[in-house]
Length: 422
Image 1 (cartoon, rainbow, N blue to C red):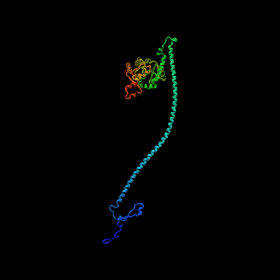
Image 2: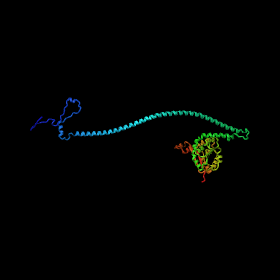
Image 3: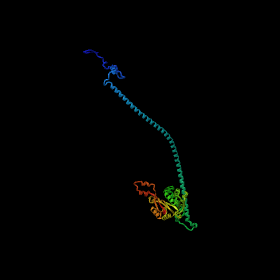
Image 4: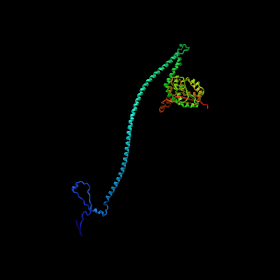
């Protein structure tokens, strides 16, 4: 293109020479076709000029900043990905550990299942054994009931025999004049003290004690509380023997024998004496007062009388206390045990279960009796409370004094020591 001026005629350079960018004008058909990549423009002049001409301010720098930001962004993403990979790896290890732990548990469960299966077999065998034992027990109980009834029937026959023999003996004494004897006894005399009646009463008392006093083992355990006192007295007196007045079945003597304490007993009941002798105890048939009177001075370490004094008139009880002071060695011990009738249940019921009980011997009477006989020191103990005593004491709305009167100690013990004279 030629442009005329006032001085010269110059030819105007083409548009490419001025640095202008030639833009492609798409046709209608090209516009309708989809483009796979964006159209690019070509700056012909910039290709050569960029090497020689300095870059103008504001041209080209935005592209470099974008490239730098993209690098930092990629670096940040790589770092984050690195840490995420570490966390994922740690999580994977934890998951692997959990899987191993669960696998071990599964193995243990399998082992437990196996053992439970074996245990189930054992339990089945145990139940089978229990069933067999129950069947055997039922069979044994049935046989025991039969034998028990036979024993009761036999015992009843024996009792009737004893009763009949004693009755026949009394009948002979009653009609002894028909046999040519000089004296004659009335029925009233026989009921008070004949040999036949005495035998009948001995059998009765033995049965009564076995049924209501308690077993030999129970009474022995109850009397065990006195062992320390007796052992101390035996040591003080040089191991002199112990005498038990009214020894009965021999529960106390058996306990002393097991404790290696020399002891013997006296009782007027031949039935109980026979039972004690069968147990291998040193027992003698006779009156306790007569046996005590026959002993030498200072010959015993301990004299005991369990549930005897309530059977005797008071003058005989006093005689025993006075005679014991003579027979006991210095340091020896006299001990009485009797029902504690301050307990209302004892005084109103159990004391009267034994028809041979004459009257209660309270602690006031026995305490003064021991003082009068010269024993010192004297100790009074209330023992063997009712099994429900603690239960009633623990109730806040139950009076303690009432609990003591109703369920308190059922036995009273008085212990007196013969002074040594020091």
